[in-house]
Image (cartoon, rainbow, N blue to C red):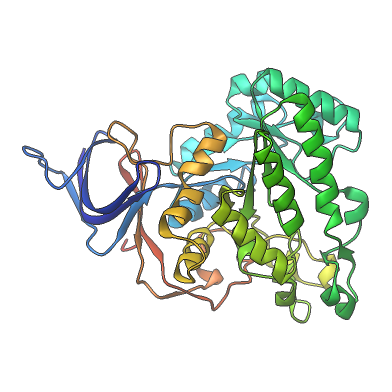
Length: 420
């Protein structure tokens, strides 16, 4: 199979490409990025005139069940995502090689996005006994995490970090103090007071980040903070990076646009954990991206049934179906002059790949042809009811986006075509 992508605006931060060029693919591998290739006769051509051609996107945090892999990987490629990570707190919990094999089998049968797994840090995520991290690594896990379950015992957290460090496994952390978070469901502030809802203070995140940074410094483990939501946490992680700690961080795409005020009158579609924070927090998250403190943007995808969002706000299930809005929300920051196009694409491609330690997220001769082609002038209205995901739970209904995926290719094969 020979593929010729013509006249596209090639954007690849890893290779510092940002100009109109053609891409030539043979047997799933990029063989040339040039204006022409003598003797190359394509079996398929894609005219990318006026379109952006970039590496396939990589999502660091997307939840789904085994049964949901079919629909959610379809949603992923519709959103230009060619690789994603499933955290361990799924069904089944990823704390043994059999669970990894089961997920990989279902992903191969779906035949779309590459699905990577993050293994459990402790058995059954209970925070009591360390998992068999070596077996998980040998089975293919790219890192370990305790998901949304906090390890309350600091000694166990330290031992887990030490074990992960000896295996050169990245530790993925969702920083939250369970006692301060308690039964809260929104950011603690004027909005929570006005609505009479339980608040989650900034300190619920920053105290947990502080504890983990101290342990990271002591144990030497490579660590990545998921879903940072507060300005103070950005500052703390930036200071740790300046001291030479091997720490990185990501932010949810929705946290870059929404704030506590978007909850309105108890809009449960804006019920997420960590909660939507203040305008200042949102602005500092954006600044953290510009400064390179936060190096990746993720979907924090959690597809839910309609029933899960019905009822009193505090009793609804937190979560957003985010795979299909990850790219347009990120590129909206380019349209709003908050990020450059290179910065935005890097946060979705090469930088997540570096965090995972995988050979992906770039367009280079000899690399696998995982490619996303985007129409930057699509002017598309977000309609969650048309999502490929089983979850239609999105607060972005009616938002107008200027960027839409028209082709997604994995290993040189078209897995999504907007026109088909």
